[in-house]
Amino acid sequence: MKTSPGKKPGARSASAGRAPGVARVNEEKLFQVILAPHISEKSTRLADKNRQMVFEVRPDATKPVIKLAVEKMFNVQVESVTVTNVLGKRKGGRSAGRRQDWKKAHVRLKPGQDINFVGQQ
Image (tube, rainbow, N blue to C red; front, side, top):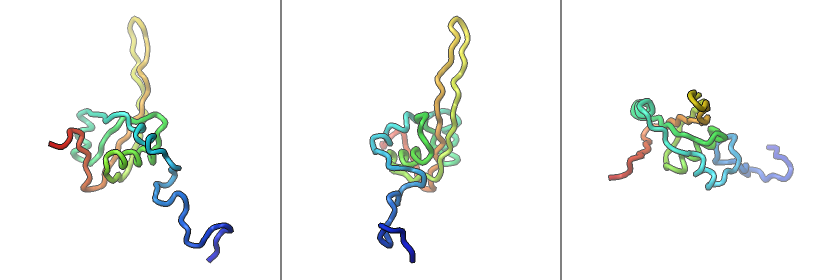
């Protein structure tokens, strides 16, 4: 078995145990990735039917970072993450303007996992 110079045989890489494509992320930054849960009729239906939770996330957040943040914050296992950039609405009237663009993440949980926003009774 050939190894590259300077590496011990059987040594693990620095990124072992992390999702592919994720550099080391500071834990404090992980807690700032998710801004809020997005509660609507559609997100409630997705949560009940498909084990999907919808979150508003930072515009610079990536799928692997969102996955790590959800797993860390809620102590659940994430199956997949889908991200959507939502364009802000244009408003007319006396002073025309536009609402801010934002990013939405649909997080699918593995079977048997659940996030309870209401809290324990």
